Structures are given as C-alpha cells and as structure tokens.
Image (cartoon, rainbow, N blue to C red):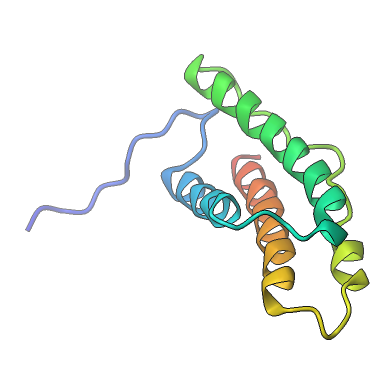
Length: 114
C-alpha cells in the first residue's frame, strides 16, 4: 500500500474536510421545501446573509485571496425555533435546525483556519 499523505493546502484556503462539511450543511438547507409562512421571514434573512458570505468566499477562493470572516451577525434562528409551538411538525423544526447547522459550519470552517 502507498503511505497516506495529506492533501496540499494553501495557507489562506479552507481544508478539504472543512469544505466537505460546509458543502454538506449547505446541501441540507438547499434540499428543503419552502419554509412555512410563520418562519419564512427569519429564514429569508438568514439565507440572504449566508448566501452573500458563500458568494464572497467563493470569489475570494477562486482568486486565490485570503479567507473572509463569517458574517458579523447571523439572524437569530434560536428565537425562531423557540417561537414554534410544540405541536409544530418536525419538518418545521428541521428547516430551522439545518440553517443553524450551516451557520455553525461556516464559523467552524473559518475558525479552523484562524
């Protein structure tokens, strides 16, 4: 067998493992149905913030530039999650929780490189 070897990385880039985690969390959000009206406003604000960060990060990565910090402030999805009634279907909770996971993966990806 050949010896294991690490993939080469640029100092300013994200690791393959971080990109993989970030992509997985992104696809979990993208693959969901449209959110219910009662949580659509909070999710829309979050989606715009995350989309802007992902686009900026992709542009900088393709140009070979340094990583960008995560957004200064993500919309408060914990509040949106708390506003759901206990009787709300699990799918509504999953829509919010997927976005919370994506926020966490963005922060993780940037923190790993710091």
